[in-house]
Image (cartoon, rainbow, N blue to C red; front, top):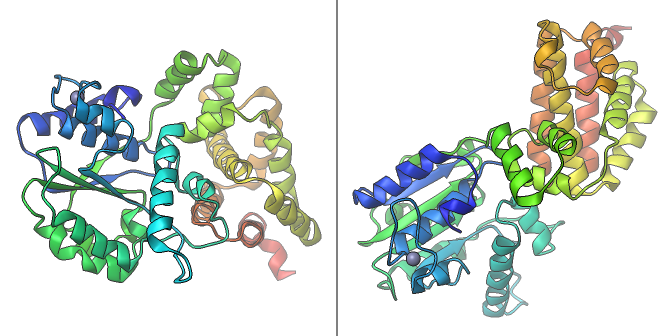
Length: 379
Ligand SMILES: [Zn+2]
């Protein structure tokens, strides 16, 4: 990955490039962003730039021996650590690891903006907890005890360090604080609050914001020739998340509006039997559609809030959705909107972490019912 392959984020790219030019590279950096931020692509582009033998002012050259290996993710001095299912003793660990690394490379090559659930799908580990094992932390130390093979530097990229087993995280504290010379740790995380404070305090944070609507708009138009009205729909749902935008692009599904309105009505009426049916339906959707429904819900909360403040002119709701927003605003105070927003965000987070879709949905429905129609609890 080169910086040029990543849309937007000009300031951060310039800062990262500058740190290399000035030789002011922190030995452990934490690329931090919300779900959907392009912190992994940025860290990959940074590793490519570090190793490049013919660096330009704005990007790696893309053609030197180091670049050609980094662009295929096979550079011997760029190591990757990422969450995976646990490997039982019955399996041949070395063979599993070699195969996993191949899968990892094709994951990065296929669609470089993908996320944890995309990776879990790639190795078909849906029903198992993904984590970074204690054994991996020993490997990190072993790998870094060797001198660089081809480059002046060694790069250790740890994706989702928040999923490190606590003993694994503790196991690398010392080397994270004092890595061997010319060794750089790039930690890439979507949840700083779940990192051990001892890990956090040893890194320099590179904050990566979500893309702007304009960045996504341009990307979809230039790279994928998506027409304007479809782009507007996608942008509204994606909310700065390019990965989601790309997945929505391939999905024609456009029934979120009815589904969401129906769901909220059932919450309000406390129609429990219907909510159970909804939870079953939700469970049957694929991950993309599950996430999109939540994303859509967050969008509608925002629209309802805008409606409250009288700012309809900047609202992004399509005409067919206006009636729902108007009706919904009548029963939703600003506090209620904020609460439902938080509930949906939390559920989204748990879904990303591979919780049971049915339980998450049902639990969410009951909590939303309680927020939007609390009176009925007392009757
Ligand atoms: Zn190069």
